Amino acid sequence: MALIEQTEVTLKDGRRALLRSARGGDGWRVNRFIREGFLTQEYLIRLPEEYLVTPWQERGRLRRRLQASDELMLLAEANGAVVALLSTNTDKRRRARHNCEFGITVSRDWQGGGLGRAMIEILIHWAEGVATLERLELHVVTANAPAIALYHSLGFTVEGLRRGAVKYQDGRVLDDQLMCRRVDGTSAPGTKVETSA
Image (cartoon, rainbow, N blue to C red; front, side, top):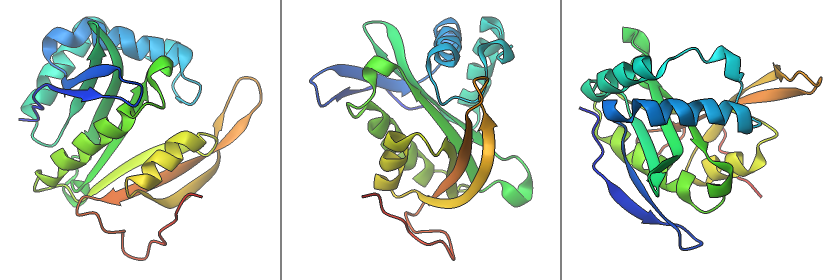
């Protein structure tokens, strides 16, 4: 079971957040946080109207995720509100089951203080204990420099680039970068390790 017990983290600015696995009872708050994220987070690809999951469906998804040993939904809360969410999606095809893709969203007023780093560190530690997982993967638009710097600092390397993969309604076109970190901390075979300046 992918259950992360509650742990408290203190951020750079002294604020504290509780990190733990999301449970079925969190369905309404998680659903609201995801919907608000699509409205306020510039670099998320999905539009708010494209997120069709109801709070009841969210509740069921969270319950199922807790039963899967290779899936994780980690939330951060402060003062009773969800302030960040990290979610994995492990490939279920046998030839690709060693790949675990994740996404993370941190509320704007909680960004830059170390919350995202703390959550990804928990993800890495959790993945090290899942026998079938070998790779953690993520997609990030190349304009999101702070996120890319964070991923590099945690051992993720660039494995691919999809030029012009993200197109905004205002006409902006951004590249999408695939980044990976081997669960054992090594670079993928043949991957050039890049460092951020």
